[in-house]
Image 1 (cartoon, rainbow, N blue to C red):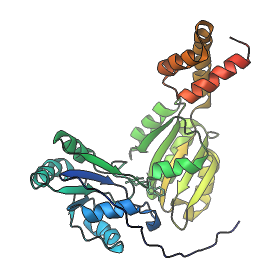
Image 2 (image 1 turned 180 degrees about the horizontal axis):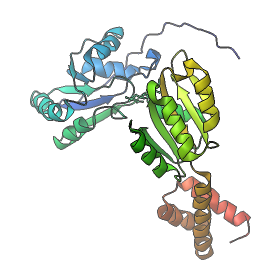
Image 3 (image 1 turned 90 degrees about the vertical axis):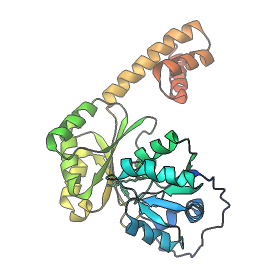
Length: 301
Ligand code: SAM
């Protein structure tokens, strides 16, 4: 397989954005590939009065690249709680609009912004989204693991004991598990996952998504650990680790779903049975519908 390098100069299309003043815009930026910056994100950031960001020098480079001159102000984990209320009150009193971006991807997803959005909501300000890149959804969309139900676990604790405790609490979870991981801990985390979930559990590690060295490692946890250990490059960069849910528990979940459907289908039609069991089980409606077809095909109702 080969990849052809194609360079096409395209400028971002002009888009109309209507900016509410006062108003707060939560704007996604690329996770590595500047081509993923959206026209609406650029137009919104150019139109607001101030942009809050984690690292002003880092974000200034992105903004300069797209010719956006809006002033920036630092809002990071250390000052977020204290700054948010003050900044938003001042901005609202002046009838201004602001945006929040993070160093990469979608703010609040393992990034600052939670206190900021809470403060904006408490102040009664409109909070709007300008969605875009996010390593979580980008990785899941190419992993080939079930996305019907997944649990985003963010970063694991750095301390060994806390990390092991967190992983062992997740060992029987039937949902796909998604973790963020930084380069210096990838091997330690994968090794701890082998211990907690078993060497054979299916997993996918997505490295350097959207960048030149984007790589996907697919296989059992043990296979992936061996490949990362053997290849020095494999432990460089940024990672999303996705682990298939516990299959035995999924089976138990499905058996329970089918049991509920057998009872309800015996009393009512499929439409009502699916509606009731969807509400009872919390499973997606389509999964419940498919299970209802299996139950009927097995001649159980
Ligand atoms: N807010 C960001 C998002 O929307 O994905 C995530 C920020 S978090 C501080 C950084 C972590 O996200 C990295 O350590 C890595 O786990 C993951 N990540 C970010 N960019 C990535 C990329 N291009 N490829 C793989 N993982 C990435």
